[in-house]
Length: 174
Image 1 (cartoon, rainbow, N blue to C red):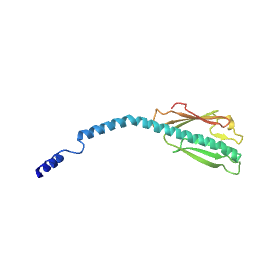
Image 2: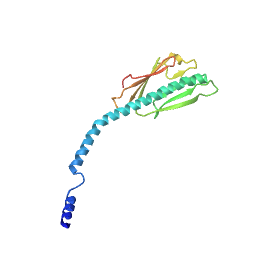
Image 3: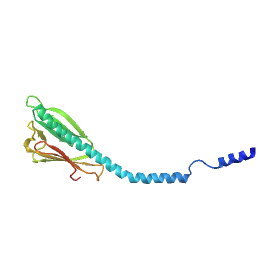
Image 4: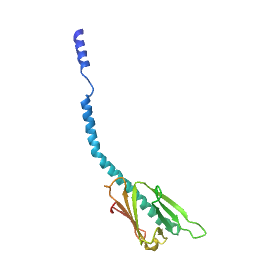
């Protein structure tokens, strides 16, 4: 009886209960193929999310400027500065002298965002919201937002008309 139990124990020791090297290599190869297929899709989705976030930031800044001009009953200037890092949008209450202008808020924009600002008429450099719910100089603005990390994202536009209405659309080209 003792001899038969030794044979069973010997057989169990001889059979391995782990994975072979070939099985592990095949599994890793399959995972690599799946990751290589999914990676471009993930990077495009991240770029689209950055565009959406920047679009929301610009729309919120425009809406805040409109509301602040009405609440404060004074002009509010929106200044987009693409020369700083990070890019900024500053809202400034325009006070009458001798009181100096005051900053209301500053919005930072991600470094990968590419923003094209088109103001009509072209003689206007900054947007001024008036308490009568209009834009000074009858100006209109179009912000086109793209992402530098990907060329396949959907560009968005934030439009501001001369009566200070803000709307967001999927349009434009990068």
